Amino acid sequence: MATGSRAVLTGSDAERTAREALFLLVFGSRPAIRQALLGRLVGAPVS
Image (tube, rainbow, N blue to C red; front, side):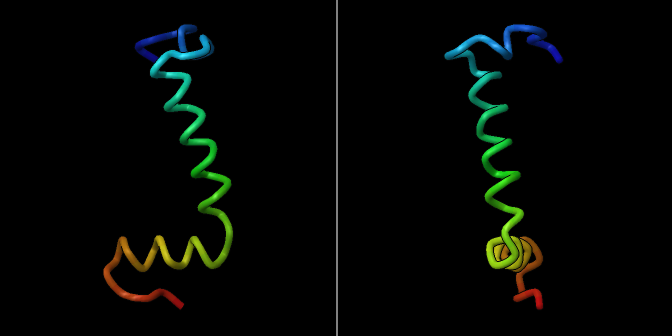
């Protein structure tokens, strides 16, 4: 929000951060990867 429309400019920090967040959203939604990530967050395997 602080950078406004600059987030759509190629090469800006906001654009890179948004692209990385979208990648992680898709990547982290796969069942096996989601379980592994949750296991790391809570410190134990999640079944």
